[in-house]
Length: 211
Image (cartoon, rainbow, N blue to C red):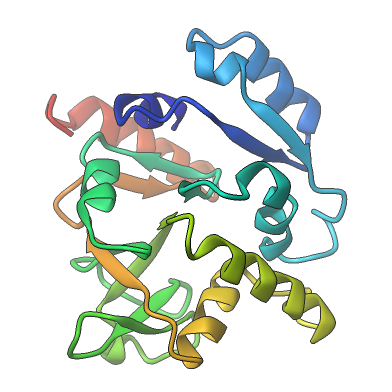
């Protein structure tokens, strides 16, 4: 994932750790890529009890005032995903696979006639969704304070079990625009279990050089 970031000229990396944090830190320290070795590591002390919204919130101080790309830690990305994300108009862009079959588990996105994402959750009927959010977004600096303030409000509102996508959806419901980038032409894979890991290895072996 860090190699993909370096390919699009991202040199400042923030890694939020929780479960088996020591292994992640050792991996970064021994990485071939200098941006990985220089990465700022932030501890999420509540990783076992709160939803992943908090992993984004704890990086607030490091990300304040910057455009940033947020990546879930379990996603394999082909080289075409991030350039497509960066080419889309901001200030908030969600990477969607608009060609994948959708079911109950996927994080689904509904899009309006202006190509704005207006709903983002796992509960919506698949027929209403434009595609699946792959866990990769771009948040431009002007939108950042609004996003982090909403993540804080989720704690006040008792939504500590939620995904970070819930903050985006709450903002959408208040009229904040989020666009999307259709990355369905590019390789990606979420790795949740051993079967996903095997699929990821197969994708890497069979992928064309361009993706």
